[in-house]
Amino acid sequence: MKKVNWLLFAMAMVAISGCSVIGGIFKAGAAVGIIAVIVVIIIIIWLVSMFRGK
Image (tube, rainbow, N blue to C red; front, side, top):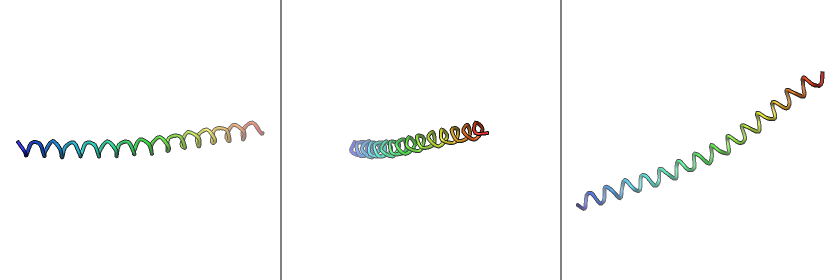
């Protein structure tokens, strides 16, 4: 029975650390996504102003 308890404890620790890793990935992904959207909007504005200037 003790082996089962240790196994459950080890599995819980792996799951908890995995959740924090996934949380970090999503935070970084959100920041990169926001930056990518801003860059795309700037490029679109630049292209529109290039064609409108002629």
